[in-house]
Image 1 (tube, rainbow, N blue to C red):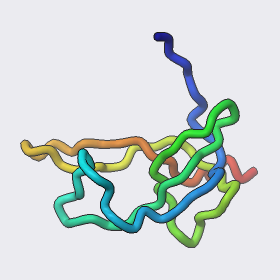
Image 2 (cartoon, one colour; image 1 turned 180 degrees about the horizontal axis):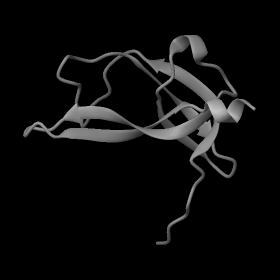
Image 3 (cartoon, rainbow, N blue to C red; image 1 turned 90 degrees about the horizontal axis):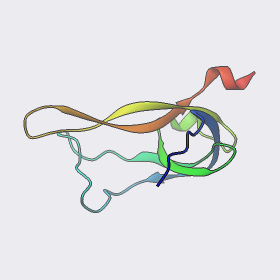
Length: 94
């Protein structure tokens, strides 16, 4: 197996609101489940599925986004576990 480096920025190809908790092994945050955006991001060579850390008012097909990390949950020992997501890329608007 070989690795392939992917770009860290792209554009929202499609999106939806994840309105209900995913099935296990998903772990909700300590303060309970909150709906979030998820979608496909076009990185040029490939589409990737990811959480989209984008406010609803800004969400749109074609939105420039950049890779980021967001909290997923806290482990049993209190350690914050992160996951990847994409946030709006203000530089990509140019």
